[in-house]
Image (cartoon, rainbow, N blue to C red; front, side, top):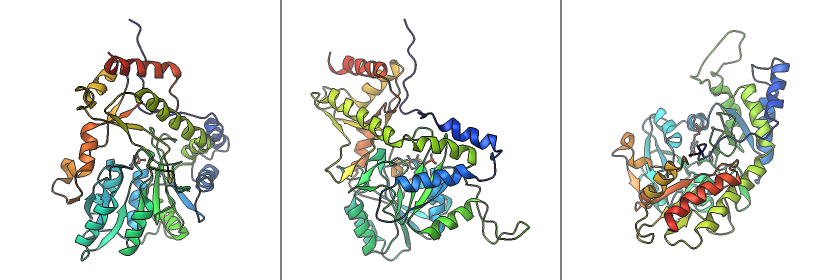
Length: 381
Ligand SMILES: *Cc1c(COP(=O)(O)O)cnc(C)c1O
């Protein structure tokens, strides 16, 4: 039998100019410290984002670091509460725990799969007498959360929003980039994201003061002095000039990457068109434009004659094709046992019945043929 190469869920896809920027850093010995690639990558990001206001960006070692700095800037600490979308990756929640704050989890709504505005308001009412310091919605798999409704509720209770836009670079809500709505937002350039620097992230904001302060905290909070002087605890979170060079090359192809991911999503929709029991995470209307970082489906095994999420996942695995169950909601995770949760359990059903299909922008026609032939063997017997 011919051995088939592994098809990954989402693998790095270089554009070509990454090496040019990295070589420039070597040629000028700007391996360290911060340098032109860091500044260049930051301005590539801010000029790419479309919004009402001018954005500022600090590039960092990870998206998790960006969220951590955002919480530090809002002075989140023990005794405080942070309201977080439960249906997400631990990168959203870990920084809240680093700060020792209490998390209150919010369910998803069934159309965007993101933070349910109704459950959010219930939680804010219930915790009115506590110090709620931030709300963190997530644009999961690239799908914009309902930012107008979430913003209106946040404004009513005067609570800042930190957008987790780690998966949503290139996504738009009402024509405006995800990441430009909240008081601050985090982006991620981890290895499997829509663009990657091999690992990295950014904190972005319309508020320059936040970003200046984030840069300060991310470089060990060094006060101005010839010696090392510290009046605050800082972090070593700044992105290096080498890594930022990869980011510069990736920003040249971001529009293409969004188009490729969206084309993948359409291929899967065409394939499943006549198969009952399969539904997609779908843009509810023209207000939503997802980068479709990952194509995510739900399987209703009552309508698929018993074919379940696991049937599909295991069959793909047999063919050396990676797929993955949707995020396990954080309120169901052992580390957050006993934490409060508002909602009806919509995201629990997503976890039980959902699957992310291979979605890399570098998938070839041949690889799609392999994926569809495996799926055909399950559904079209
Ligand atoms: C990837 C991701 C993060 C964290 O980003 P890293 O760069 O991996 O630290 C946070 N939240 C979500 C939803 C993510 O997908």
